[in-house]
Image 1 (cartoon, rainbow, N blue to C red):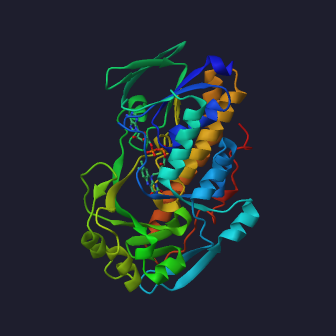
Image 2: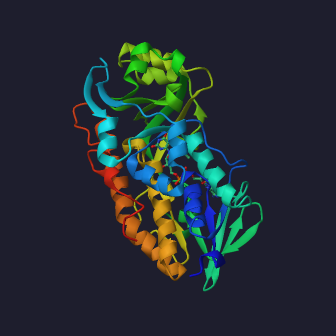
Length: 384
Ligand SMILES: Cc1cc2nc3c(=O)[nH]c(=O)nc-3n(C[C@H](O)[C@H](O)[C@H](O)COP(=O)(O)OP(=O)(O)OC[C@H]3O[C@@H](n4cnc5c(N)ncnc54)[C@H](O)[C@@H]3O)c2cc1C
């Protein structure tokens, strides 16, 4: 397959879609990314980028710049939810010593911005906003994609990187839709100066409580604290993950948490608190149909409990690029990609569900991504 003669269409300009575009571009492929949003941007929130994903970013040439913009909390604590007592501490320097690099706490906008910049530096016309995927048709020589704005584009292959409610996935495998998990999450960014001193000192900490957990960690060199709370809810109707929430509503769910955590919730500035209902889909028997494959949450919708959703999308992206570079045909490239990735994607998806139960039950022992050996994976060298 002559790379520069192949045109790959990517649906979705999230972290997975942009990383896939970059991995393919760096191997000589022409890539067009189509995003439904009117602008190409990420929401303000944190994301943990572990060594397994940093290896993908290093290969993509953005890890160093990301590390400069991020935080790298020296200690990662697990605490008792109603007293704040520290019961487990993972040392980031010990992780770095074993893995060659530590865990980064990252503002999603910073990671997304670096990927976008790199894709556009390779090809200023690669990314197109305002294109909502609605349908596709494939034949022996390529794939035609139709968008809600009436545009049609043709490519040699299509990668569906359109998130956990993926329209590409629903188009390929109709009748299999995301389901509400019975869990609602809150998220906020709190300026460091507003955080209670004990919270600032702990830096990165997880608090497992009955039917809920709370997590905070620093971003941007410690200037902002990212706060996440996740608990159970009876019903959830609204779509989207940026639904405004109030401090009172958040506090109501956490009233038996340690006083400094209630103070942290109270310190969230107005307009900075959001909630979203967690949705999940069942693992698929295949991620590929003809010249179309899925990647990231579209392939393996990831609940947030192991902090590996974006990491898995980044692993997928690099392996996809390597699979295309190694293959003679599109069919072979997609088969190599799926063979290298599906077992890991499915396992992590299922382990994440399991960890979700633990995080909402303080009597259960945590098995973090580190405990499960997920950091050891290297998408730059794994066999494709
Ligand atoms: C805004 C956001 C915040 C998140 N926050 C957290 C978190 O704090 N912790 C955590 O563990 N997980 C979180 N997740 C999930 C986690 O980050 C994901 O596992 C990770 O982002 C997967 O990346 P992705 O590129 O596969 O999907 P996404 O990041 O969901 O990106 C998909 C992209 O596709 C676009 N798109 C969707 N439908 C269409 C369509 N029909 N046509 C064209 N484009 C389309 C979307 O607008 C989006 O830009 C979040 C997801 C999102 C979208």
